[in-house]
Image 1 (tube, helix red, strand yellow):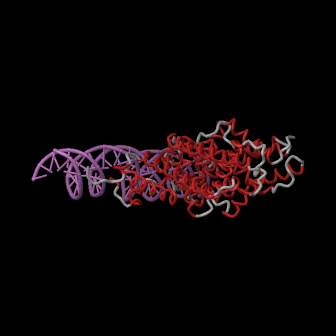
Image 2 (cartoon, helix red, strand yellow):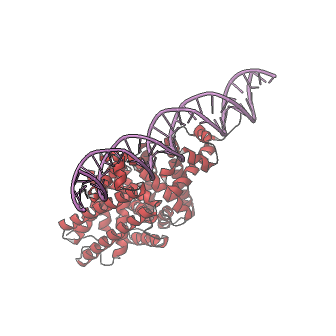
Image 3 (cartoon, helix red, strand yellow):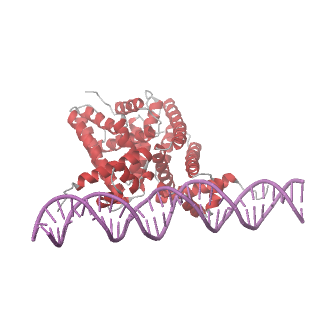
Length: 198
Length: 198
DNA sequence: TCTTTTGTCATGCGACTGTATGACAAAAGA
DNA sequence: TCTTTTGTCATACAGTCGCATGACAAAAGA
């Protein structure tokens, strides 16, 4: 067995090329040739690691989800006060700097794509469920710490909070809000949940 | 000048065909041939009314925006109590039945497309601004009527409310929520704004 | 050394893309 | 009647698409 190659690394490399194309020119510009060129490899090599375009897109979607998950885990490691963590988590999801803007542009493209692709939708829903559970946990923790109103339904408020975040993302990516306005909206919303800054 | 044809009607017909394709198979499946077939006309006829694919998509986007605007105007005509109207307006934006689901599927596809197409983004922002102003007006009216907390910043709450709606739309279209859950989330959110049902 | 496996590549295939062009029918004004 | 305008259509064009195939290099086991 010669030429030991890390298949996962190659696939990640391909997925990243897909991300860049989606970010720069949109999902419609993703083709095997374009991806190969962006990844700096031949089309045949791309085909060797990815049997079909559909599989390639799914791979790119899963990788973006993993990336977001890692970023949120890093946030969790940086904050201890529950409300602080909750706020930081949501801020992490918003397009407030170049990298988060990049993530969200790619993410929104995949959300739209997932509407007509059940495999992608499945991956998307798994990410949703994970994130919602995390947010609900933080809300409950904040309630216990007396930093959020005790009468809140944590699960529903987690859904509302995440919906708010996604909606803000949509609007911002289309150019309706600036990063500065976005953070103000989040704080306004949290204040309505009885937020007591720690 | 023979064969008097209503150009606007033809263009609407084409735009509707675009909508159906976007809804059924996604934005990537929109091609002049596909649209011509869906519209029941030849490709040459489509080209006669629409000079380029980009213009065709922009036309379809503007028509969807107009459609949503009409639906909201109809809602406004049906409700008088401010909070009632506010709630009904947001519900109108959510994918709670077949038609609203259709509108939102097409709408989300265009949102993603607008991220990499400045002309579409411009049209999108105009729709946003209009809708946000409308929501803010209703919030202020509800405050005056004592149906919403008086200390709310109407403009910001309008932004939050609309972001919430859009986020719920995203999640629902990907299959994360059922229509029943969606309405419950809205009422939970409004309750937090001090809503007093009229 | 020879065989086998693993990876890379160029190329071909039929189908489809957006756009341009020219033929042509129908109807109104000359 | 003849010309001109308006609309429709089929077709040609160069380019791109996803995918399949076969040649070939490199390295490890026989």
